[in-house]
Length: 220
Figure 1 (cartoon, one colour):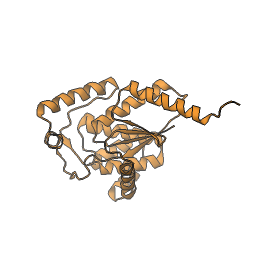
Figure 2 (cartoon, rainbow, N blue to C red; figure 1 turned 180 degrees about the vertical axis):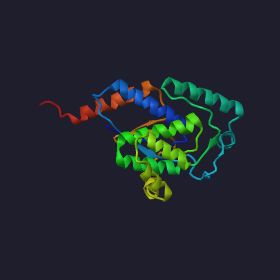
Figure 3 (tube, rainbow, N blue to C red; figure 1 turned 30 degrees about the vertical axis):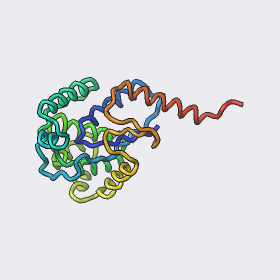
């Protein structure tokens, strides 16, 4: 089973969704072999490198009051804790394009290292309020994921993989993905949002069972 996890480092529900998906996969066990790939989506593609105050940005974008934003953050902390992700106080929104370039490269190297890099970036952004567009933050995350920091620095120094990331973003947009996380199973099934573990588990089990039925010819 191929799972494309379409998401943005800046998306807090993507952190919740990824950890919930992983807990669901643990429950399903090794009898369901999975290839997990991370695909790019930018919530704020026009965000300047300096970023923007998070409260001001979210209030303007969603029309939310300070009280509503506080309630959402409390809910996120609760949902994150339930699946093993610790949210900190994120004070700014930053551009994530370079993070996506690094993730794309990691995917060409090793799927496990791409997954580790995704976790490192989510923890940096949502756990420690660090800028995922900052070179030092990106290189530290690459090192934590077991990637070659020298190669990572060379990639970030230019525009390597920029065209590839843009094309993957357009690919998912053409398929109708407008919000993340979007979990695409075998290019056919879509699970939207940071769902609870039980929802992911049930959906994946049903998809796997239906695929097995389809792939197995009826007994004469």
